[in-house]
Length: 409
Image (cartoon, rainbow, N blue to C red):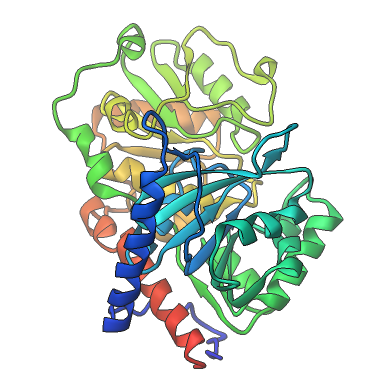
């Protein structure tokens, strides 16, 4: 077992690929080629799945298509090393319906949507799809699938912790018990932020911090000439914009009051509305909700943000999730105005504008419109920050640790 430093976050080692890995990848590629031959011509769903060998099975209670956050980039890069089956949120099984639907993301990454009456039935679904009786590596994004561990054989368990359940509202005692069991079973724990690392390093011996990163090339497309979308073209400029889930993590009253102070500025929010009612949304004339946009469309919209806002509730325990949003806006070269979130301030205080009231938010917007990158406490260039944050670099480090654990170190 790897020993954990008690006073600092561990460094992320780089990985290399062995000849044995290359041989396994070739076999995995052949298995996926067989799968693609059974795919319906008009969809990515495998109509007649055949058994395949999966070196890694990933469990996530979120759909693969929900946004493009931590799970998708990590597993896309990780599929360079392993043949992966990604088990997403289950749906209720209907009469005469199959036990699951498969779709290929790439040659070595397949998504399974289980169709089950109870999540514990997922183990039986996996047995029908896999020609290996033992899963070499099981990776858990969240704790919802923990009960499946009772019905599958696993060599190595990874828990990728993205939320501090102990400090989150509305978390059931059952979910807390699931996490406790998962931590007992886990050989390796990754956290998506420093605060989560500090919380977990006392309850597990192998905890490593790998903050969420960003696809720099994708969001840098906002710097190229792209046609303005129709919906945002009808909105008065300047625009202060946000992209992401619109839910109870957002300080809606802050936006509401700031919009009243600056009636000549448009506040644009892009993303799905979740866990709140549309009646909870501020309805000022200069606040606009453009709905969900695809991952591919986001850079186009960010191009037309005069400034980007991160109006997250300061009391929200999920601050570590906000750091990724800051990196996306940096890659799009947008000036950023944020509430005082620990995870953001700890890393980016010299590159973002921090506000803690509607009045300061309004004053900062005015200053940003005049001089976008005049940071009060000096400035660290976006390029320097982005150079140190790479999904590939993180995944290489994760994979190196995974190999060390499997080799008994």
